[in-house]
Length: 162
Image 1 (cartoon, rainbow, N blue to C red):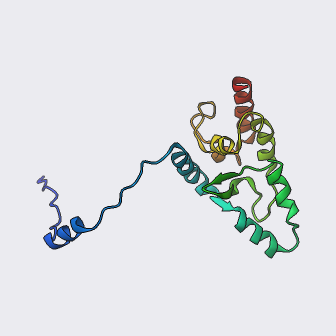
Image 2 (image 1 turned 90 degrees about the vertical axis):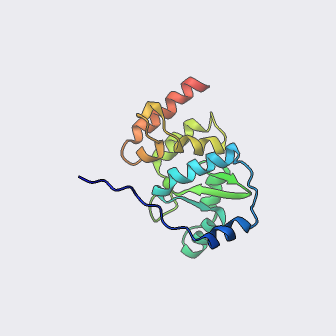
Image 3 (image 1 turned 60 degrees about the horizontal axis):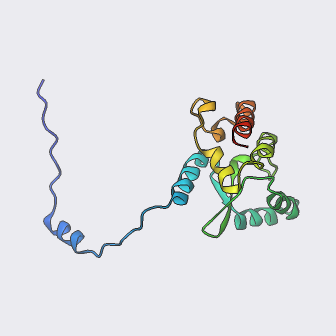
């Protein structure tokens, strides 16, 4: 069997010269908050990602049958997972029943434990990071099938970290 080496594509010297002549932008290294935000976006993406507070308000207004206070009160009372990133309020969609703005009972149960331990950011991050107590899975990925295990992991964190 003859194995032929992969040949690199021919590079046009003109395009190489043009690329090197472009002004280069200096990027600052990502902060811990930026890396954590990326982790949350990655984890929440399969579960509907996140919705901005403004988007959520538009949805409530368009629905017409849901008073704005029905979502504003839970946000203010910290009964939902929410974060503020770069001045924008964001709410992960995994916590809402599909097609409604009702918080899943499994999320509410876990939040009652986590809110005593973490601020809003770290609560959201807890849902997004793999946990050893969940076999390396992220809580957000197990909520639908193993809500009791997620609650137990939150309760264990409370006993360990308080």
